[in-house]
Image (tube, rainbow, N blue to C red; front, top):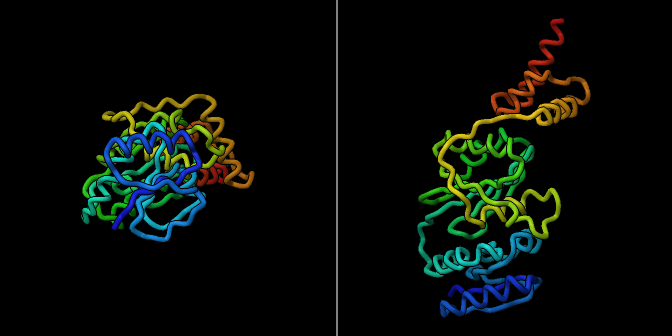
Length: 253
């Protein structure tokens, strides 16, 4: 028999969860975040950071103060024991090394950090092939605007449903550069539906940053031109391809 458990050190989050669960006449327990869960049928609420830092068996539901209602609905769905999964939610923390997190019917399944934006689509397609679900939703954080918009355009081109999530709701208490936790928080929060492709307008700083990264990636041997950096910024060329093209051009001179 499945049971509901609140497992978090966040007192405010725990208090709000208790209020909502009681209002729905749901039976639950409150345990210390370090208490081991041994029953695989346990459905437990916790913050994204605690889910990743203190894993346990069962079905963990990431929750924040802004996503309590949806988290409780996910728990109710899981309590019903419906075998066919309905919704795969993928959260993306945008940046040069994107964070990726995925939930099935609101329950945490996994996270990863990718080496480049180019790895996103293949990784998501692998997930769709390995998980059983009816619909998919992509949630993208609103940070790193240029890369964010590249990812939005990429997802829309695949005809995926996309939401943009306000990261100010997901970053409280976050360890800097922990893209996995950020991606999980993004996945657990609703956002604004995006319908149209974004126009990419790289700034001078974006181009310079990409040129600097190209030099790092080539161990100081190659700095790509502004023209190539602009294509990389717009997502029309990968960094590896730009370095190769610059190298070929340089060797011809």
